[in-house]
Image (cartoon, rainbow, N blue to C red):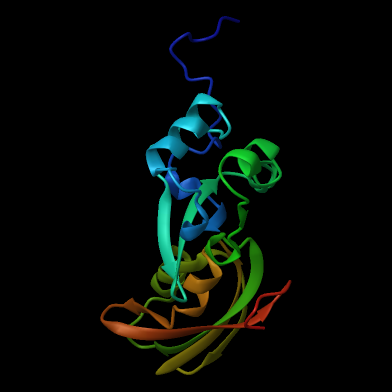
Length: 191
């Protein structure tokens, strides 16, 4: 049968915005060669179509007192190809993996405690945790009484490692639910 010519041929899974960037590379800003401005680097990347998207700006962040210039990627393969691209090393400088900014893609068990069993809907708690960290796979444990509930949640984590370990709780109906990672399939610096 005929196709709708107005229908987008883009995949529904195709990354669309900077929120879809999951992998990052970095170099110390001080390593950028003399005379190279952000604009010159951006023009080089765009003119040579080195990235899978058009660059408008370079990312800058400070971590542990060091300033980094970074770029984001939709896939790990694209990030690795960029790191190993000889044109980048010869023209700009050696980029490295920026692990602490990469999105995790791991299954982790999260402890959720301090849930008011009388006045809090468990589904609202789960939704608040999912909004912050990732997707719930399974409630592995739910204990407590009518007054207080504690749960262990197996989750597919989609945030950064720093976001995971700097999230102490979620607010549900003006009550803080304490959350904490307790086990991880794979290695993280905090386990």
